[in-house]
Amino acid sequence: MNNEQAKQLQELAKQAIAIQDACNLSGVVHSFSAALTKLREVTGSGINEHPITIVWLDKLNSLAGIQDSCVNIIRAYDKVYDWADAFGVPIG
Image (cartoon, rainbow, N blue to C red):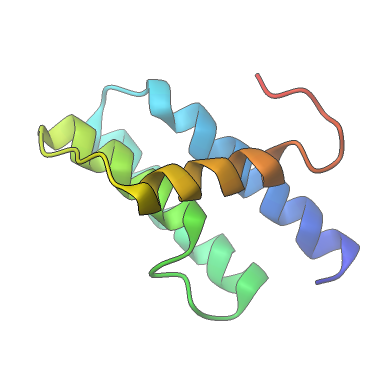
C-alpha cells in the first residue's frame, strides 16, 4: 500500500468512526455506499469482510435494532481505530 492509499484508508477509518453518532438510517446508507466505492479503490477487493465495512454494518444493525456483540466486530473496531490514528492525528 502506497502513502496515498494509506491516507485514504485512514480517512475511511475516521469516517467509519464518525458515523457511529449518526441517527439517520438513509443518510448512513448513502454515506456507506460512497465509502464502499472508495474502499474498493483503495484495497482492490475483499471489502465484504473488511474491518471498515464491518464497523459501518454494525452501525446499520444498531439503527435497525439488530446489533450483535461479536468478537469479529470488536476486532474490526480495534483495527479501524488503529488506521484512523495511523499518522498520529487525534480522532475527533
